[in-house]
Image (cartoon, rainbow, N blue to C red; front, side, top):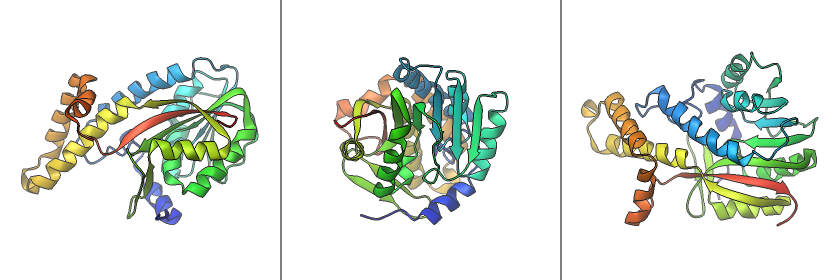
Length: 270
């Protein structure tokens, strides 16, 4: 299996545009900024349900916090938030966004090298594991387990494929693993998978991304009008939400190619 080149991964994110679309990998499809906010709002409703039983007097660790939308969200729900980001432009965006929240500590640093100093009710990995080779995923999770508070959880939100593992090479690198592979990795770390849930807002917007890609591949560039097409597809998906996400399964189609899942993990072997 191909391994990620971390130098290439770091180089890509060091130049990332600090917008809500960029870290969601939704740039270049003609979507308005509202598409990113729409997806985040949908995901935050899922997260709110998954963390509802946690003690809000505890601390959240947000690893790979991106532009800080999740750190800001957790700041309104927990006593303290530690947000870690390696990309300087994304870290600066987090720091600016969370300035009104004195309970947020933003840390500029590499996630695998981060050394926990507290105990956490929630550890949030919002698309971090896909940028790590399997051995480093295991090392990171094993390092975090001793710092989970009693009753605390690790919540992962990771892009997935339906079968096997796909490693993307080139300028943008990532590892897309299937749900069963993640289950195996989590169990190997000594973590119990207590809940797995499809990230429907992601699937909806990924349908849009892949539709725009197909449009780009079939229509001559001078006739693509991506800003117009992207907006039309976005509003079609939004108005058709949530029933549009069910259409491929009804038709027996594996679409979109990429999916996304939330994994709720607790210390203790399955």
